Amino acid sequence: MGVISLIFTVMAFSAPAVAFLGFIPVAIALGNGVGTPVAFLACGVVVALVAVGLTRMARSLPNPGGFYAFISAGLGKTIGLGAGFAAIIIYYVACVSTYALGGIAARTIVSGVFHGPSLPWWIFAAALWAVVGVLGYFRIDFSARVLSVFLGLELLLMAAYDVSVLLRGGAEGLSFDSFHPTNIFSGSVAIAFMFGVGLYGGFEATVIFRDEVRTPERTIPRATFSVVALLAMMYATTAWLFINAYGPVAVLDAVNTDPTAAATASIKQYTGEFAYTASTLLLLTSAFASTLAAHSIATRYAFNLSVDRILHHSLSRVHATQLSPHRASLAMSVATFVGLGLLVLAHIPDEIVYGRLSGIYTYTMLLLLALVALAILIYLVRHAKSEGAIAKPVASCGLAFVILCIALYLATVNFELITGATGALTIVLLLLIYGIVATGMVMASIYRRKRPEVYARIGRDDPEFIATDT
Image 1 (cartoon, rainbow, N blue to C red):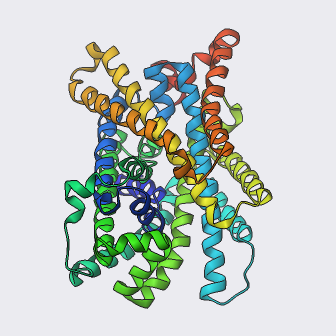
Image 2 (cartoon, helix red, strand yellow):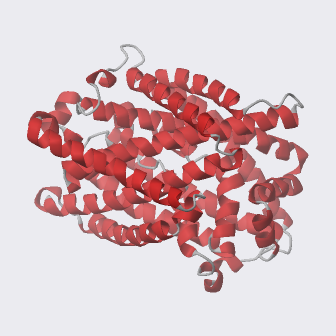
Image 3 (cartoon, one colour):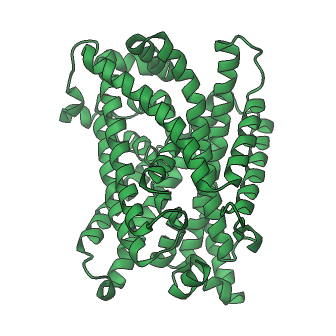
Protein backbone atom coordinates (compact mmCIF):
# COMPACT_ATOMS: atom_id res chain seq x y z
CA MET A 1 0.00 0.00 0.00
CA GLY A 2 0.99 3.59 -0.54
CA VAL A 3 0.15 6.61 1.64
CA ILE A 4 -3.39 7.11 0.27
CA SER A 5 -4.37 3.44 0.54
CA LEU A 6 -3.05 3.29 4.09
CA ILE A 7 -4.91 6.47 5.08
CA PHE A 8 -8.18 5.16 3.68
CA THR A 9 -7.76 1.74 5.31
CA VAL A 10 -7.21 3.29 8.74
CA MET A 11 -9.89 5.98 8.36
CA ALA A 12 -12.45 3.36 7.34
CA PHE A 13 -12.20 1.85 10.81
CA SER A 14 -13.49 5.08 12.36
CA ALA A 15 -16.66 4.72 10.22
CA PRO A 16 -17.48 8.41 9.51
CA ALA A 17 -21.15 7.75 8.69
CA VAL A 18 -21.64 5.77 11.91
CA ALA A 19 -19.86 8.51 13.85
CA PHE A 20 -22.08 11.21 12.34
CA LEU A 21 -25.36 9.36 12.81
CA GLY A 22 -24.55 7.90 16.22
CA PHE A 23 -21.50 9.25 18.05
CA ILE A 24 -21.77 13.00 17.40
CA PRO A 25 -25.40 13.44 18.57
CA VAL A 26 -24.78 11.25 21.65
CA ALA A 27 -21.59 13.16 22.50
CA ILE A 28 -23.57 16.41 22.35
CA ALA A 29 -26.34 14.96 24.51
CA LEU A 30 -24.16 13.35 27.18
CA GLY A 31 -20.99 15.41 26.91
CA ASN A 32 -20.38 19.14 26.86
CA GLY A 33 -23.27 20.01 24.55
CA VAL A 34 -22.62 22.87 22.16
CA GLY A 35 -18.90 22.76 23.02
CA THR A 36 -18.49 19.25 21.53
CA PRO A 37 -16.53 20.40 18.41
CA VAL A 38 -13.77 21.77 20.64
CA ALA A 39 -13.69 18.51 22.61
CA PHE A 40 -13.15 16.63 19.35
CA LEU A 41 -10.32 18.97 18.39
CA ALA A 42 -8.75 18.58 21.84
CA CYS A 43 -8.85 14.80 21.44
CA GLY A 44 -7.14 15.17 18.08
CA VAL A 45 -4.36 17.18 19.70
CA VAL A 46 -3.84 14.53 22.42
CA VAL A 47 -3.77 11.71 19.87
CA ALA A 48 -1.35 13.74 17.73
CA LEU A 49 0.93 14.09 20.78
CA VAL A 50 0.99 10.30 21.09
CA ALA A 51 1.56 10.01 17.33
CA VAL A 52 4.69 12.18 17.60
CA GLY A 53 6.26 9.61 19.91
CA LEU A 54 4.77 6.65 18.06
CA THR A 55 6.32 7.58 14.73
CA ARG A 56 9.62 8.50 16.39
CA MET A 57 9.83 5.16 18.18
CA ALA A 58 8.81 3.31 14.98
CA ARG A 59 12.08 4.46 13.41
CA SER A 60 14.05 2.64 16.09
CA LEU A 61 11.71 -0.33 16.46
CA PRO A 62 10.70 -1.43 12.92
CA ASN A 63 8.17 -3.90 14.30
CA PRO A 64 4.57 -4.23 12.99
CA GLY A 65 3.29 -5.12 16.49
CA GLY A 66 1.59 -1.77 17.18
CA PHE A 67 0.71 -1.04 20.81
CA TYR A 68 1.78 -4.55 21.81
CA ALA A 69 5.35 -4.11 20.55
CA PHE A 70 5.83 -0.55 21.78
CA ILE A 71 4.47 -1.17 25.28
CA SER A 72 6.62 -4.31 25.55
CA ALA A 73 9.73 -2.33 24.62
CA GLY A 74 8.97 0.56 26.97
CA LEU A 75 7.25 -0.96 30.00
CA GLY A 76 8.58 -4.50 29.85
CA LYS A 77 7.42 -7.76 28.34
CA THR A 78 5.03 -8.62 31.17
CA ILE A 79 2.91 -5.48 30.79
CA GLY A 80 3.46 -5.67 27.04
CA LEU A 81 1.81 -9.05 26.70
CA GLY A 82 -1.11 -7.85 28.81
CA ALA A 83 -1.45 -4.89 26.44
CA GLY A 84 -1.21 -7.23 23.45
CA PHE A 85 -4.13 -9.28 24.76
CA ALA A 86 -6.12 -6.08 25.37
CA ALA A 87 -5.36 -4.80 21.86
CA ILE A 88 -6.53 -7.92 20.08
CA ILE A 89 -9.65 -8.07 22.26
CA ILE A 90 -10.72 -4.47 21.64
CA TYR A 91 -10.51 -4.86 17.88
CA TYR A 92 -12.33 -8.17 18.20
CA VAL A 93 -15.07 -6.42 20.20
CA ALA A 94 -15.15 -3.62 17.63
CA CYS A 95 -15.51 -6.21 14.88
CA VAL A 96 -18.40 -8.02 16.58
CA SER A 97 -20.18 -4.77 17.46
CA THR A 98 -20.06 -3.46 13.89
CA TYR A 99 -21.31 -6.81 12.59
CA ALA A 100 -24.33 -6.31 14.84
CA LEU A 101 -24.71 -2.68 13.72
CA GLY A 102 -24.44 -3.69 10.06
CA GLY A 103 -27.02 -6.44 10.55
CA ILE A 104 -29.46 -4.03 12.18
CA ALA A 105 -28.89 -1.44 9.43
CA ALA A 106 -29.41 -4.07 6.71
CA ARG A 107 -32.66 -5.21 8.32
CA THR A 108 -33.87 -1.60 8.43
CA ILE A 109 -33.05 -1.12 4.75
CA VAL A 110 -34.77 -4.35 3.66
CA SER A 111 -37.93 -3.73 5.67
CA GLY A 112 -38.08 0.07 5.65
CA VAL A 113 -36.65 1.12 2.28
CA PHE A 114 -37.54 -1.91 0.13
CA HIS A 115 -40.60 -3.00 2.18
CA GLY A 116 -39.31 -6.54 2.51
CA PRO A 117 -39.69 -8.95 5.42
CA SER A 118 -38.38 -7.97 8.86
CA LEU A 119 -35.83 -10.73 9.41
CA PRO A 120 -33.62 -11.11 12.49
CA TRP A 121 -30.54 -8.87 12.35
CA TRP A 122 -28.15 -11.78 12.81
CA ILE A 123 -29.08 -13.20 9.38
CA PHE A 124 -27.73 -10.06 7.72
CA ALA A 125 -24.77 -9.96 10.11
CA ALA A 126 -23.90 -13.51 9.06
CA ALA A 127 -23.89 -12.41 5.42
CA LEU A 128 -21.53 -9.53 6.27
CA TRP A 129 -19.35 -11.95 8.21
CA ALA A 130 -18.98 -14.19 5.16
CA VAL A 131 -17.98 -11.29 2.89
CA VAL A 132 -15.47 -9.88 5.39
CA GLY A 133 -14.01 -13.35 5.93
CA VAL A 134 -13.38 -13.77 2.21
CA LEU A 135 -11.88 -10.29 1.76
CA GLY A 136 -9.72 -10.70 4.86
CA TYR A 137 -8.18 -13.83 3.36
CA PHE A 138 -6.72 -11.94 0.40
CA ARG A 139 -3.87 -9.43 0.31
CA ILE A 140 -4.44 -6.11 2.05
CA ASP A 141 -4.30 -3.91 -1.03
CA PHE A 142 -7.46 -5.62 -2.35
CA SER A 143 -9.33 -4.82 0.87
CA ALA A 144 -7.86 -1.30 0.75
CA ARG A 145 -9.47 -0.68 -2.64
CA VAL A 146 -12.85 -1.87 -1.35
CA LEU A 147 -12.52 0.32 1.75
CA SER A 148 -11.54 3.31 -0.37
CA VAL A 149 -14.76 3.09 -2.38
CA PHE A 150 -17.03 2.91 0.66
CA LEU A 151 -15.11 5.54 2.60
CA GLY A 152 -15.26 7.83 -0.43
CA LEU A 153 -19.07 7.55 -0.46
CA GLU A 154 -19.25 8.34 3.26
CA LEU A 155 -17.02 11.38 2.89
CA LEU A 156 -19.10 12.55 -0.07
CA LEU A 157 -22.29 12.44 2.02
CA MET A 158 -20.69 14.31 4.91
CA ALA A 159 -19.21 16.91 2.57
CA ALA A 160 -22.60 17.44 0.90
CA TYR A 161 -24.25 17.91 4.29
CA ASP A 162 -21.56 20.27 5.58
CA VAL A 163 -21.66 22.43 2.45
CA SER A 164 -25.48 22.56 2.50
CA VAL A 165 -25.62 23.72 6.11
CA LEU A 166 -22.80 26.18 5.51
CA LEU A 167 -24.41 27.75 2.41
CA ARG A 168 -27.83 28.00 4.05
CA GLY A 169 -26.40 29.45 7.21
CA GLY A 170 -27.94 26.87 9.48
CA ALA A 171 -31.21 27.45 11.29
CA GLU A 172 -30.39 30.84 12.79
CA GLY A 173 -27.29 31.99 10.93
CA LEU A 174 -23.87 30.52 11.60
CA SER A 175 -22.99 30.73 15.28
CA PHE A 176 -19.59 30.29 16.91
CA ASP A 177 -21.05 29.59 20.35
CA SER A 178 -19.28 26.20 20.30
CA PHE A 179 -15.96 27.98 20.76
CA HIS A 180 -17.05 30.10 23.73
CA PRO A 181 -15.36 29.05 27.01
CA THR A 182 -18.72 28.82 28.77
CA ASN A 183 -19.89 26.14 26.33
CA ILE A 184 -16.54 24.38 26.06
CA PHE A 185 -16.55 23.63 29.80
CA SER A 186 -20.28 23.03 30.14
CA GLY A 187 -21.88 19.67 30.89
CA SER A 188 -19.53 16.68 31.13
CA VAL A 189 -16.23 17.44 29.40
CA ALA A 190 -14.96 13.99 30.43
CA ILE A 191 -17.73 12.17 28.56
CA ALA A 192 -17.22 14.35 25.48
CA PHE A 193 -13.48 13.64 25.58
CA MET A 194 -14.13 9.90 25.91
CA PHE A 195 -16.42 9.87 22.89
CA GLY A 196 -13.90 11.99 21.01
CA VAL A 197 -10.97 9.65 21.66
CA GLY A 198 -13.07 6.76 20.37
CA LEU A 199 -13.34 8.53 17.02
CA TYR A 200 -9.57 8.27 16.54
CA GLY A 201 -9.40 4.54 17.29
CA GLY A 202 -7.19 2.53 14.98
CA PHE A 203 -4.77 5.34 14.14
CA GLU A 204 -1.86 3.13 15.27
CA ALA A 205 -2.78 0.65 12.52
CA THR A 206 -0.44 2.61 10.26
CA VAL A 207 2.36 0.89 12.20
CA ILE A 208 0.64 -2.51 12.23
CA PHE A 209 0.61 -2.60 8.42
CA ARG A 210 4.34 -1.82 8.29
CA ASP A 211 5.24 -5.00 6.39
CA GLU A 212 2.52 -4.32 3.80
CA VAL A 213 3.32 -0.73 2.76
CA ARG A 214 5.88 0.77 0.40
CA THR A 215 8.82 2.63 1.98
CA PRO A 216 7.45 2.45 5.56
CA GLU A 217 9.96 5.03 6.84
CA ARG A 218 8.13 7.71 4.84
CA THR A 219 4.67 6.18 4.39
CA ILE A 220 3.89 5.52 8.06
CA PRO A 221 4.58 9.02 9.50
CA ARG A 222 2.78 10.72 6.62
CA ALA A 223 -0.25 8.44 6.92
CA THR A 224 -0.38 8.65 10.72
CA PHE A 225 -0.43 12.43 10.96
CA SER A 226 -2.72 12.72 7.93
CA VAL A 227 -5.27 10.38 9.51
CA VAL A 228 -5.30 12.27 12.81
CA ALA A 229 -5.54 15.68 11.12
CA LEU A 230 -8.27 14.62 8.69
CA LEU A 231 -10.38 12.99 11.41
CA ALA A 232 -10.00 16.02 13.71
CA MET A 233 -11.08 18.50 11.05
CA MET A 234 -13.87 16.32 9.68
CA TYR A 235 -15.55 15.49 12.98
CA ALA A 236 -15.12 18.94 14.54
CA THR A 237 -16.47 20.67 11.41
CA THR A 238 -19.43 18.31 11.03
CA ALA A 239 -20.29 18.58 14.73
CA TRP A 240 -20.18 22.39 14.55
CA LEU A 241 -22.38 22.49 11.45
CA PHE A 242 -24.80 19.92 12.91
CA ILE A 243 -25.23 22.18 15.94
CA ASN A 244 -25.86 25.13 13.61
CA ALA A 245 -28.34 23.09 11.56
CA TYR A 246 -30.68 23.13 14.57
CA GLY A 247 -29.35 26.16 16.43
CA PRO A 248 -27.35 26.12 19.68
CA VAL A 249 -30.48 25.83 21.85
CA ALA A 250 -32.73 23.60 19.72
CA VAL A 251 -29.99 21.04 19.07
CA LEU A 252 -29.93 20.00 22.72
CA ASP A 253 -33.65 19.23 22.66
CA ALA A 254 -33.25 17.27 19.41
CA VAL A 255 -30.36 15.06 20.55
CA ASN A 256 -31.90 14.40 23.95
CA THR A 257 -35.17 13.29 22.35
CA ASP A 258 -33.63 10.89 19.79
CA PRO A 259 -29.95 11.25 18.85
CA THR A 260 -30.01 9.09 15.69
CA ALA A 261 -33.26 10.60 14.43
CA ALA A 262 -31.83 14.08 15.00
CA ALA A 263 -28.95 13.37 12.61
CA THR A 264 -31.04 11.73 9.88
CA ALA A 265 -33.74 14.42 10.07
CA SER A 266 -31.09 17.09 9.67
CA ILE A 267 -29.68 15.33 6.60
CA LYS A 268 -33.14 15.16 5.08
CA GLN A 269 -33.79 18.83 5.77
CA TYR A 270 -30.54 20.16 4.34
CA THR A 271 -29.59 17.70 1.62
CA GLY A 272 -32.92 16.25 0.52
CA GLU A 273 -34.77 12.95 0.36
CA PHE A 274 -32.14 11.21 -1.76
CA ALA A 275 -29.35 11.97 0.72
CA TYR A 276 -31.62 10.86 3.56
CA THR A 277 -32.14 7.48 1.87
CA ALA A 278 -28.45 7.32 1.02
CA SER A 279 -27.53 7.91 4.68
CA THR A 280 -29.49 4.78 5.61
CA LEU A 281 -27.59 2.77 3.00
CA LEU A 282 -24.27 4.32 3.99
CA LEU A 283 -24.83 3.33 7.60
CA LEU A 284 -24.67 -0.26 6.34
CA THR A 285 -21.64 0.27 4.10
CA SER A 286 -19.91 2.26 6.84
CA ALA A 287 -20.46 -0.58 9.32
CA PHE A 288 -19.15 -3.02 6.71
CA ALA A 289 -16.02 -0.95 6.02
CA SER A 290 -15.37 -0.52 9.74
CA THR A 291 -15.79 -4.26 10.29
CA LEU A 292 -13.38 -5.12 7.47
CA ALA A 293 -10.81 -2.68 8.87
CA ALA A 294 -11.25 -4.00 12.43
CA HIS A 295 -10.93 -7.57 11.15
CA SER A 296 -7.69 -6.67 9.35
CA ILE A 297 -6.20 -4.96 12.42
CA ALA A 298 -7.20 -7.74 14.84
CA THR A 299 -5.84 -10.32 12.40
CA ARG A 300 -2.44 -8.65 12.37
CA TYR A 301 -2.31 -8.44 16.14
CA ALA A 302 -3.03 -12.18 16.22
CA PHE A 303 -0.37 -12.72 13.55
CA ASN A 304 2.25 -10.86 15.61
CA LEU A 305 1.39 -12.75 18.78
CA SER A 306 1.77 -15.96 16.78
CA VAL A 307 5.15 -14.89 15.38
CA ASP A 308 6.23 -14.40 18.99
CA ARG A 309 4.94 -17.93 19.78
CA ILE A 310 2.30 -16.66 22.23
CA LEU A 311 -0.51 -17.92 20.01
CA HIS A 312 -0.15 -21.12 17.99
CA HIS A 313 2.69 -20.82 15.47
CA SER A 314 0.44 -21.85 12.55
CA LEU A 315 -1.27 -18.44 12.68
CA SER A 316 1.99 -16.74 11.64
CA ARG A 317 2.06 -18.36 8.21
CA VAL A 318 1.79 -16.04 5.22
CA HIS A 319 -0.08 -17.05 2.06
CA ALA A 320 2.33 -17.95 -0.75
CA THR A 321 0.60 -15.84 -3.42
CA GLN A 322 -1.66 -13.42 -1.51
CA LEU A 323 1.12 -12.51 0.96
CA SER A 324 -1.57 -12.17 3.62
CA PRO A 325 -1.76 -13.64 7.15
CA HIS A 326 -4.54 -15.89 5.90
CA ARG A 327 -4.56 -18.36 8.79
CA ALA A 328 -4.80 -15.62 11.38
CA SER A 329 -7.63 -14.14 9.32
CA LEU A 330 -9.50 -17.46 9.26
CA ALA A 331 -9.01 -17.82 13.02
CA MET A 332 -10.42 -14.32 13.55
CA SER A 333 -13.42 -15.18 11.37
CA VAL A 334 -14.13 -18.24 13.51
CA ALA A 335 -13.75 -16.19 16.71
CA THR A 336 -16.14 -13.46 15.53
CA PHE A 337 -18.67 -16.07 14.43
CA VAL A 338 -18.63 -17.45 17.98
CA GLY A 339 -18.99 -13.91 19.36
CA LEU A 340 -22.01 -13.23 17.17
CA GLY A 341 -23.54 -16.50 18.30
CA LEU A 342 -23.12 -15.52 21.94
CA LEU A 343 -24.74 -12.14 21.24
CA VAL A 344 -27.76 -13.85 19.71
CA LEU A 345 -28.05 -16.28 22.64
CA ALA A 346 -27.74 -13.43 25.15
CA HIS A 347 -30.86 -11.74 23.68
CA ILE A 348 -29.40 -8.26 24.17
CA PRO A 349 -31.90 -5.65 22.88
CA ASP A 350 -31.02 -4.47 19.37
CA GLU A 351 -30.88 -0.81 20.29
CA ILE A 352 -28.11 -1.24 22.88
CA VAL A 353 -25.89 -3.93 21.33
CA TYR A 354 -23.57 -1.58 19.44
CA GLY A 355 -23.52 1.11 22.13
CA ARG A 356 -22.57 -1.28 24.92
CA LEU A 357 -19.79 -2.99 22.96
CA SER A 358 -18.40 0.25 21.53
CA GLY A 359 -18.27 1.65 25.08
CA ILE A 360 -16.05 -1.27 26.13
CA TYR A 361 -13.84 -0.63 23.10
CA THR A 362 -13.54 3.10 23.82
CA TYR A 363 -12.62 2.60 27.48
CA THR A 364 -9.96 0.01 26.66
CA MET A 365 -8.56 2.26 23.93
CA LEU A 366 -8.08 5.00 26.54
CA LEU A 367 -6.19 2.52 28.71
CA LEU A 368 -3.91 1.44 25.84
CA LEU A 369 -3.24 5.03 24.76
CA ALA A 370 -2.14 5.93 28.29
CA LEU A 371 0.13 2.88 28.47
CA VAL A 372 1.71 3.46 25.07
CA ALA A 373 2.34 7.15 25.82
CA LEU A 374 4.20 6.18 29.00
CA ALA A 375 6.01 3.34 27.22
CA ILE A 376 7.30 5.59 24.44
CA LEU A 377 8.45 8.19 26.97
CA ILE A 378 10.40 5.61 29.01
CA TYR A 379 11.85 3.91 25.93
CA LEU A 380 13.17 7.14 24.43
CA VAL A 381 14.64 8.35 27.72
CA ARG A 382 16.25 4.96 28.34
CA HIS A 383 17.84 4.99 24.88
CA ALA A 384 18.58 8.72 24.82
CA LYS A 385 22.24 8.30 23.87
CA SER A 386 21.46 6.27 20.76
CA GLU A 387 18.20 7.98 19.81
CA GLY A 388 19.50 11.51 19.30
CA ALA A 389 16.99 14.39 19.63
CA ILE A 390 14.15 13.11 21.82
CA ALA A 391 12.99 16.23 23.68
CA LYS A 392 9.96 16.83 21.49
CA PRO A 393 8.52 13.27 21.45
CA VAL A 394 9.26 12.82 25.18
CA ALA A 395 7.49 16.06 26.09
CA SER A 396 4.59 15.20 23.78
CA CYS A 397 4.08 11.74 25.27
CA GLY A 398 4.52 13.03 28.83
CA LEU A 399 1.75 15.61 28.37
CA ALA A 400 -0.48 13.08 26.60
CA PHE A 401 0.06 10.54 29.41
CA VAL A 402 -1.10 12.99 32.09
CA ILE A 403 -4.20 13.98 30.12
CA LEU A 404 -5.07 10.37 29.27
CA CYS A 405 -4.72 9.26 32.90
CA ILE A 406 -7.17 11.97 33.97
CA ALA A 407 -9.52 10.93 31.16
CA LEU A 408 -9.22 7.26 32.14
CA TYR A 409 -10.10 8.05 35.76
CA LEU A 410 -13.13 10.08 34.71
CA ALA A 411 -14.18 7.36 32.25
CA THR A 412 -14.00 4.80 35.06
CA VAL A 413 -16.18 6.98 37.28
CA ASN A 414 -18.66 7.41 34.42
CA PHE A 415 -18.42 3.85 33.12
CA GLU A 416 -22.20 3.36 33.32
CA LEU A 417 -22.78 6.24 30.89
CA ILE A 418 -20.12 4.92 28.52
CA THR A 419 -21.47 1.37 28.22
CA GLY A 420 -25.10 1.70 29.28
CA ALA A 421 -24.45 -1.03 31.85
CA THR A 422 -25.82 -0.68 35.37
CA GLY A 423 -25.31 -2.20 38.78
CA ALA A 424 -23.23 -5.37 39.03
CA LEU A 425 -22.75 -5.55 35.26
CA THR A 426 -20.60 -2.42 35.44
CA ILE A 427 -18.21 -4.13 37.87
CA VAL A 428 -18.21 -7.30 35.77
CA LEU A 429 -17.24 -5.44 32.60
CA LEU A 430 -14.46 -3.49 34.32
CA LEU A 431 -13.12 -6.70 35.85
CA LEU A 432 -13.27 -8.32 32.41
CA ILE A 433 -11.23 -5.53 30.80
CA TYR A 434 -8.53 -5.50 33.46
CA GLY A 435 -8.74 -9.28 33.79
CA ILE A 436 -7.69 -9.65 30.14
CA VAL A 437 -4.64 -7.46 30.78
CA ALA A 438 -3.87 -9.42 33.94
CA THR A 439 -4.16 -12.73 32.07
CA GLY A 440 -1.49 -11.62 29.61
CA MET A 441 0.76 -10.49 32.44
CA VAL A 442 0.37 -13.80 34.27
CA MET A 443 1.17 -15.71 31.08
CA ALA A 444 4.28 -13.60 30.56
CA SER A 445 5.41 -14.36 34.12
CA ILE A 446 4.92 -18.08 33.51
CA TYR A 447 6.89 -17.88 30.26
CA ARG A 448 9.71 -16.05 32.02
CA ARG A 449 10.12 -18.92 34.50
CA LYS A 450 9.32 -21.96 32.37
CA ARG A 451 9.91 -20.95 28.74
CA PRO A 452 12.47 -18.12 28.70
CA GLU A 453 13.00 -18.49 24.95
CA VAL A 454 9.33 -17.52 24.37
CA TYR A 455 9.49 -14.75 26.95
CA ALA A 456 12.51 -13.29 25.16
CA ARG A 457 10.47 -13.02 21.94
CA ILE A 458 7.56 -11.03 23.46
CA GLY A 459 7.29 -7.76 21.56
CA ARG A 460 10.34 -8.67 19.43
CA ASP A 461 12.22 -5.59 20.59
CA ASP A 462 15.48 -7.41 19.96
CA PRO A 463 16.84 -6.41 16.50
CA GLU A 464 17.89 -10.05 15.95
CA PHE A 465 14.28 -11.25 16.22
CA ILE A 466 12.96 -8.44 14.03
CA ALA A 467 15.48 -9.14 11.28
CA THR A 468 14.90 -12.90 11.40
CA ASP A 469 11.09 -12.70 11.32
CA THR A 470 10.97 -9.97 8.70
